[in-house]
Image: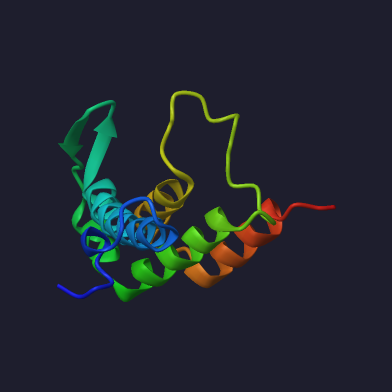
Length: 128
């Protein structure tokens, strides 16, 4: 272990807290990445996760590079305060923004993904 590891630093020191926060942030990001994988393959209802049944076309889309690029673009939109990505009018659906739109794209293979994302940016942009 290096001297930078939190367990070797003086507990309570600023360096110890900073190193521990960095360590926790790294762990959090790893868990979030794992959760994204589960969300893309399972329907989460409360504390249970059921495998999602997908058609061959949907499986093909979710396994494609196009899906990965769409996921990254949608996540950037969701993280950007300049876009409204929460929908209060969707009753009975607590599906996250990214998954909701990936699901749409997977069930509509004829949709131009770049055009869809461009239109989504226009519709969700916050006007100030």
